[in-house]
Image 1 (tube, helix red, strand yellow):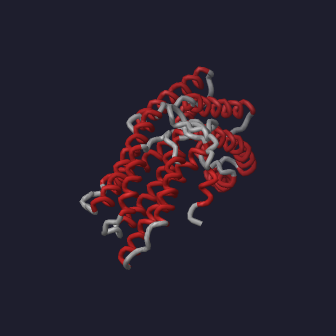
Image 2 (image 1 turned 135 degrees about the vertical axis):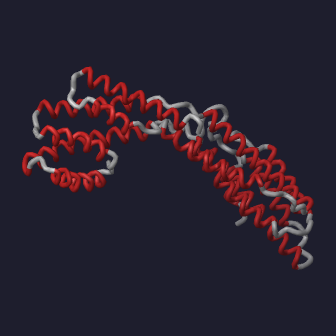
Image 3 (image 1 turned 60 degrees about the vertical axis):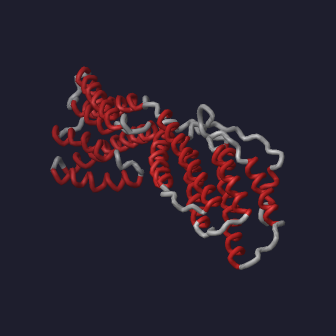
Length: 342
């Protein structure tokens, strides 16, 4: 992402400066450490910021207690710091707060340098923690809006899907195998990038389940797996039959209607009608026709899976903003789905 590295760097720089300024203004000892804590606490998403803040504060409090016990018991020696880490790291792992270890080390080294423990020093260290972690958390509350990027990914992925379906239809009508399959490569790369960005976007809206592009791209990824299986079946269809032409026309209709807010229900019903029509067709005349029609029947079953994946997402009623949010409405003939291919 173009904004990613530069944006986080800017927040890190600002948070570090503000934290040092506040700590220095309060005349705290080791005030520059507030900047270090702020720098360590800057995260890429809001969700990670909340988790990081909790981990660092928790481990720092525990570290103060443990370090005071160790230093006052066995003295301020280098191996006392080693013993501190010997106990603190497993404890942080057990608490699933390993990020807080480095932060806690910054704090307890202040005690080590001064070789003393007092309530004033404890308050000083807690103030550094709150200032450093708190400033980072405040800056992390604002994250750039990536919805326009997600929409563009969605648009390009849908274009690729449409192109793939049209190529499938063209092959069934002509047996022309000249397609280079470039859309298969591009859609695979885009899905990977889009899911990563959508997951980060979801972590920036942890309490808004409707704001969920991730499920949409996950749905497309599952459909893409179906398309890859369909392509394997298509490669076995090397002769022309009327059923292949019907499937080709159906693929073209699905490709034309491809989008985030279309319904799969009407296509599922049409697919069932086509399957029943195939069932009433005359029996194959030879082995070659039998094998080809078996592959065509398998393609129809994969198309059913493809459409049901979309319908399942629609039923969940998630994905947000400008046509991406779908609300499940009762489908009069939804019981038809349960009767397929029994």
